[in-house]
Image (cartoon, rainbow, N blue to C red; front, top):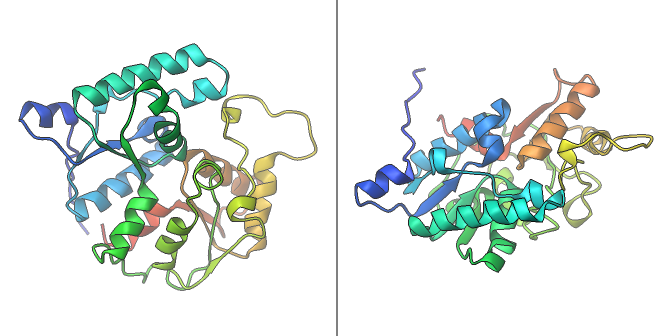
Length: 264
């Protein structure tokens, strides 16, 4: 089957033509630089194109949100990055930001307003759940309809922002076999990478957090671990490899699961 070529709109080019998109799609560092997570961004772009959503990306003008710097204790670097981003948002009159990464979502929504960055921030799962409710998004669940899927709640989506129902609504549109880990929702265990832990060596202990969480997922008997965060995806994928389960268990982002069930 021939794959359709999709041209991603760039904010500066649209603005130069006198056009203003409804959403700024924030790609994020992982979406820009991590080969695995680039596939997630491509999947979501396909969904946006399918839905004919008015959006654009910043392209080379996009920088880090400053979240890792702030979590690691470098407040000055965080504020420099945040203020630079806020100025770009103002220059393009950005009103709505669509994010894939929960860390980007959290800092835009809850911390940027302190510096004057006041935009409506929407995580992609909130967006997809709304599209399903409106009947605009109706994936055909033939690919994973009878596949057992478990969902790992990202900390910055779940406990930090109480986004629990939306991911489950989206997954239930795809499968009749959604199973919960025994630690889920507000009791879910962290993947071990948040709070800038991704960028430091493991501390002393009997077991790393990502291994504990992978074991939670394996106990469900699911053949797909669904994630919605680049940090979680990295840790779950590593956990599957450490357990030598790569042939039996797959890790997909929810955006990928939707895209593969839309023939995109």
